[in-house]
Length: 355
Image (cartoon, rainbow, N blue to C red; front, side, top):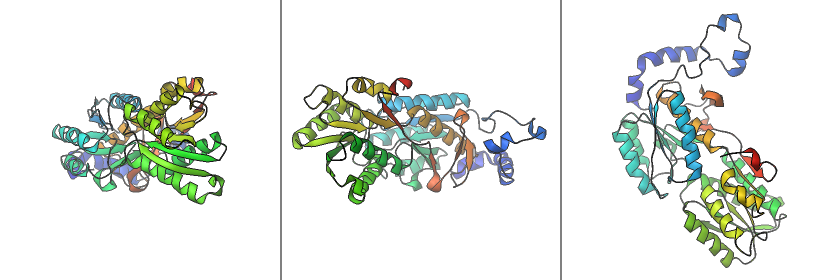
């Protein structure tokens, strides 16, 4: 948190800090509380500053994944009696995000929620925003930790990479060529998951018969992801599976496969929303894929930013806060707050989800 923001809330935050120093109450502690605690506020938002301006800047707009995230963030902002703005470029590039960060900084936005297209290229603008009093919380895709206050991660990176590889291996019987259709080459989350996949393929004997033959980038653009899928299949005639750890990419790849001779022959898995992928599961193009709830991710990001802007947390490891109905969360190392494990979707359960 910036020094300016700390000064803005010094008086009320000193009181909060003293309470925290004496020991907070977790959900389990509250269950055991006696009659003396009955007069305490039951409102989980009572300690949050009201009237905060919260803005979400995704990798790109017109993306169902980020649309869902924005709805969660807006719900949190409304619950906290704040204002919400959803803004961003139509293309997933770091240079396009810079002007939006600068505008939000000039508007003295209290909380900027950012899914970054590059880990370093945005740092200068983010530093200026923080110096001006904005709390910067990255979500989905991080920047250098020195350039933001906190990062809200979907899940542990290892869990995502392992899940993607497990699904692909299961669908091809543990044998064959696989390729990856990613988003942008500099996306930190995508690259972390790909690193896990590559490491497992090199070191885990369970995957000894699987070969990663290519990694391509659709830049989170539908048409480019569609054409990259076509290119992969032409370049690798023996390809067994495509892993696409991006909601835009997996939907575009599924659309291509569903109308081609490769349907049912080349497996496709990755990260997608149930509403995007339902038709492709129904028609047999896709067997199983995974994702976390992007609405909950946006909601948690907004609560995390509001908690920092309100002085409830500073980003230090071990701090806790309550994110509305999502419950209590703990800040981890490097200011990371993690939503939870991914959910796998298939024909048996996809009808139970609507996002």
